[in-house]
Image (cartoon, rainbow, N blue to C red; front, side, top):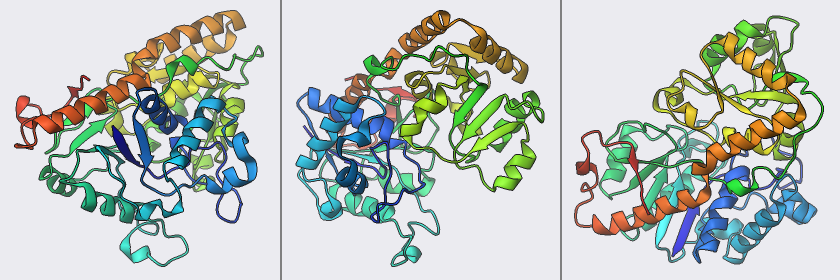
Length: 395
C-alpha cells in the first residue's frame, strides 16, 4: 500500500529557516509523524509525504544530529526513506500514484496562509497545497482527514461528505458532525518511551507544561492560578505565552519561558515533578487527547489528568479533582525516592500501550477497507450508528 501523508511541520529537533536561522514555530510533528512512517515500513507499506520538507535546511548543516533528542536511529532512517521516495521542496507539485491519502487538516489563518497572503514574505502554502491534494485525489483513492485541532467546519464537512471522506480524531468521544468520526490515539512507538532514565535529583518545579496559551486561559485560571500564588514559582511553562506582560500579570505565580524545540524537552521535563494535561474546553468535553501524556513520560516526568477531562483515566496515573489535589499529586511525585519515581513512570508507560502506532496504522487499514466496501454509498458507514461518532476502527 502506498500512503500519501500531507502535514505541515518539522520532524527534527531543530527548526531552521532557509537562511539557517532558528525559527519559532510549533513542532508537534517531530514527536509522532516519524512513527507512522516507521510502522508503515515495518508492514511493507510506503509512506510518501505530500508537502514541503521543512527540515532540509537543518539536515544540510547538522546531519543526523537533528534527531538526537530521542529514537535517533529510527527517526533518521524514517526521514531518509521519505527523502528517497521523492520528498523535496518540489513535492507540492507532485501527485504520486497512491492507495490512500492521510491529511492533517489545515484551516485559514489570516496573515499566514489565506489567498490574500499569497506573495507576501510570511506566506505559507499549507492551505493551498491541501486544496490541490483534495482536488486531485478525491474520487480517485480513499481520503482520511485527521482533525487534529477541532478546526473542521460544517462547510468543510459538506464538501467532504460528497466524496465519502473519513475523519479521524484523537478523542474518546469525537465531536458530532455530518461525517462519521473514527477514534484513534496520538501514535508513538511505545517500546521507546523509557529510553531516557529519570534524573536522580529532586525536581525543581512541582508542575511543568510545554505548549502555548492557545485557548487555555480558562483552564489556567481554574486549575493553576489558585495553587501558584505570587512568589512560589511552583510551576514553569515553556511556549508561546503572549503578550508577555499580560500573562505575567495575570498569572504571577507561574514562571514563563519562551518556546523550546524538541531538543530542549529532556532538560525541561526532567526538572518538573508532574505535567498537568492542560487543554481547551472542547478537548475536555469530548476526551480529546494530545501526545502530551507520552511526551511527559518519554522525557522524564509524569502526566497528571484533570477530572473535567472526559476519559483521562486512560492516559494518566493520577487524576486531580481540584487544584489543591493537583498540587498534592505534584508534591508527592516531587518527594518520592528516585527508585519509586522510576516505578511510577514505568507503570504509567504500561498504561499507554493502547497509544502504540501499530493501533494507528491498524485504523488506517480498516478505513481503507471500509472505503472500498462503501464506494457505492458514501453514507453507508454513517448510517450504522445513531450518534454518527465515536467509531472504533478495527483493522
